[in-house]
Image 1 (tube, rainbow, N blue to C red):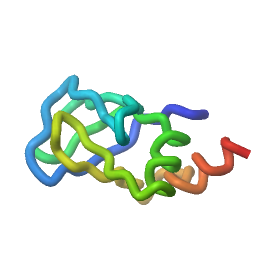
Image 2: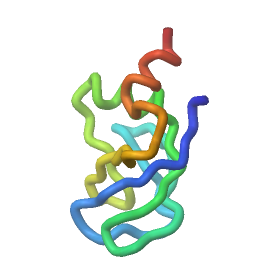
Image 3: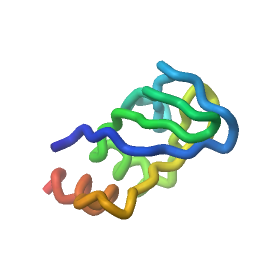
Image 4: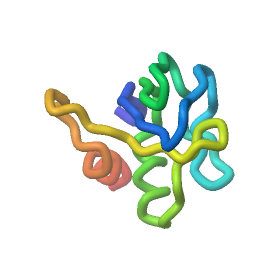
Length: 85
């Protein structure tokens, strides 16, 4: 699975519908928002590539990070890196 709905946390309030970008590439989009927390549909393989290159993820100009909930059975970066092999 390349795309997953994952929680994200922004450094400032997020806007629903904002595109998530890594460098110049669109890798997902913001869905439901509660202030600086949101749910987003993200390509995990592209997020892993961005992390490997040291690129920040941004949504609507706001720096974000992916958050793995304790109940999730997948790893954010490990799952994405494995799908590239």
